[in-house]
Image (cartoon, rainbow, N blue to C red):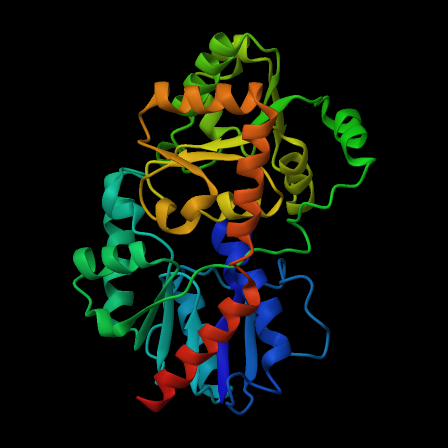
Length: 373
């Protein structure tokens, strides 16, 4: 079985993490297959300026396509390559799928944010929503990253549940783990000016759904109630914090902004933090929550979207606008070491249920089921 995979979607987003980590887990399974299946061959279609890192050089066939992912030229180039490469199946890890290819298509839908929130202007949102609908109609199989997203796809895009397979994302345990190096804390202090105790929040480009203002309000109230001095570390692009009024609006929080960080640096923040708070209004999966859990970080998050499904009993869940409830939980974690230890242990137990190896094996099963159809 020859499987084409559109790796041009590799970037610094959640979809980019999905592409990189899934491929790292898929590549070793090519020869042996999984669950008694015969092996398969991967053909990766990549952006020559941004190839997927960490893959063995001769382990996979790599084809570079320079044309843009959304452009007509890119669509035509991908169509020609798919025919030339004699694919049995094509996997698109994001909603745009190539026009006119003859082999079956599997598409991964991570969330339905464009249908639920005003994340872009009207013309762009219309085109994105149309792209989702086309993908849902033309794909032979749809992979969603949670049962919650699967239900959204059924309800909003009117797709039969029999066409959908929910496969949870994994977590990279090589990056996100609880084994802290004694020198990490001093290195973090030297690089970013971060010193314990501190709490972590995330800023993001899709700031409307991340609900950062509520997170900062809860931290401020917890600070007031506990009477403790601590830093508030904001990592990620500045968009979310700027939309929340900027750093000057939250001077009482002793903010430290790190900007965008690689996975290894984010993991170090989580390992030494008192807690991580992420009261999102909606998540298709909630990868950051699992990554923080894998580092043994106590989590306060929301009960919206897929977060209850993914966090399980490994985090404290609140209504995404319940500032008082979250602040009470934060204050208890900050002032009670036993409470913090309890939630660190629960986080680690829950994170152990997720791996990219498991995600890859279940994805391969979808490939074979699609071919059999």
